[in-house]
Image (cartoon, rainbow, N blue to C red; front, top):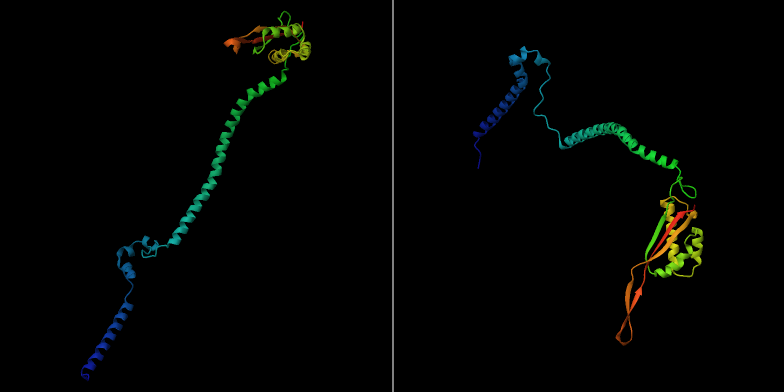
Length: 253
């Protein structure tokens, strides 16, 4: 289909008019002053007050906010500064507390240790007094040391046969006699003699070699009863005797 030759000039003229309008609007925008400058010159307060001339320009509200990495870095720097300040203040506080507590602790320790140290020094300086022959004061009775063994599985009669040999003898002689006595009860008498000597040395501060057996006796203890079967259905009683052994020691005159 052939185009109308009369309509083509109108199209060309309309496009030319549009280009001229665009160029004229661009020239007008370039010649117009910026809005901020116009607002400052038109406002009477800006021209009249001298303080506004020296004041810094207002911050642009459309400034871009900091990114997440920048915020994290700022927070980390603030935490490090606070930590360093705390680390500097902590030693000073601790040193002041230690300085306050040290004198109180030293004074309490000195108060507690002083009586103990005095008692220890006094005990070390005082010699241990051991009384032996001639160690008693005039008119003072001789101490008597007692030792007893109870429920010894032996009859009192058999025990008396041995104690009669050591009565009135010194400790050394009694030890020798009991060591060579063939009876079984002699071993019990020997143990009892050593116990009496230990009591004299530890409790009365006596010398064991200066002691004499003042008394030695054996008393009957309870009898244990048992029965043995005999002929024709009978039973015989068995008596198992016990005894209590006693030794008294005293220093030699």
